Length: 629
Figure 1 (spheres, helix red, strand yellow):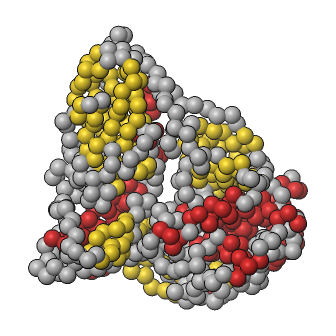
Figure 2 (spheres, rainbow, N blue to C red):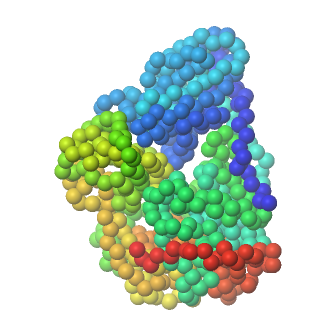
Figure 3 (cartoon, rainbow, N blue to C red):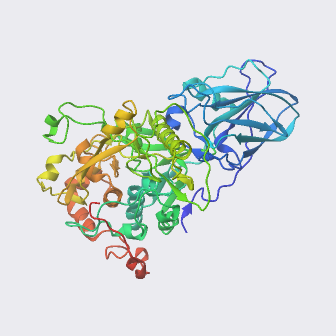
């Protein structure tokens, strides 16, 4: 069985540390919300922890208050405790009204009356009230009031009302580490470390593992699959098993879903199958819910990385000679100082007709997908009026929103990520309120909002630069490269703002359009899959070495899965030959080509006997493989 860390999580009551910050006789306790033993109906949101400082709990109830989150707190001494909560009025960028996401704090049998999350315009400490507590254990609860994404980062109980509480930055980080020092786990060493467990990371880890390497696979969510998981619900796009390396992509059949569609019920995305796929190989150690936040380098090499658990804050250091960045955002490469690009190149730089005249920071956006179901009786929805200009003419009279519901085109997809996701929720709830509660004809009366993503489906951010940069000319002219690797089949698909939607919403649209530029399937150079300045870093996914235009064809998930398969093969060659990814190209290209042609799917004849696929009938299940839909 796989050495699998964290699937069966045991919640341990935190031993809170007391630290004198002002009043020498004061007692102060910090409780991180994401560490609550019982999350109730609240969800852990880690997407913006690098920007706002921490994961947090969020009441994602689609307008229905969620169950309380609960945990036990050890009170060190009798006294009157002042209660502060770090929270954010998330609707404040668009409205001066009291925030949509409100909640309060319950301690023991008492509810503090302050409604938190209703004021302010940034992440900040808000005073919840004071309470007399006796020494010993007591129960702490987060009580949701609205179901509209109230969020709690942390709670402080202190007998010192004048305690200085920084809202952000290094001062807040230092306060956290003093009040609740992290637990450092024993370091671990591997042959290969893969950061990110979307389809690219899964295939990178598996291909290297099947060839004999010991692999760590790190994922900052508890589920695998990235945008293809039930958390985001984007179906697999692109074609597999194409020449010249027809063996590539067969692996996808082992975990890919058999039903197509975006924003469908959770079972369509078969997350259990993805987990079983990874668990099936004892050479893979999975670290779910671990976020990579540091990379140590020696010269131009990564020597180790550090990752923190998004729930309990435990920190682990992992070392390896080879690393693969499959994070989508190029996070590992960025932390290590890898060269990268964001935005669009000028048409003159690479001779791209689809590029703008001048370079800019424009990127594609992120989707918050959703769907509703029709019931047999009226389904009420709370009023959600936060000053967006919805009316009979511009509202979306639809019961389902998928990729076209794309916010944040042109914004910084990393620094502005929380704003982008929140705008996606804002327009969803506002539009749903309008068509449910304001239209004269009640044609949506029986529709119930059943699901909406709170994990944003991102398309583009950092692209790590390799020895070769894929560009439009390669694809248009079908330029041959001796290191041809995975084949891209998707059209050049570059999203842009829906002009009418932009006009209706003051230049901040939440809808996107696209124009498909059909291509002939094109084999992309292997040199796009390793960093040009970090000598032991490979990459696979939407963060590979390409222009903005080039990204338009390689970013779909069957294609990124094949990238991962190639990167895993190359990483294994590096381990066996004590060489760099660049030297795989210069010294071991015939070996790479041979393995790519055969592929690392379980029926490949190049695998050791113990890695072969013994249950061939699993390969004969119906399998959806679209052709440039």
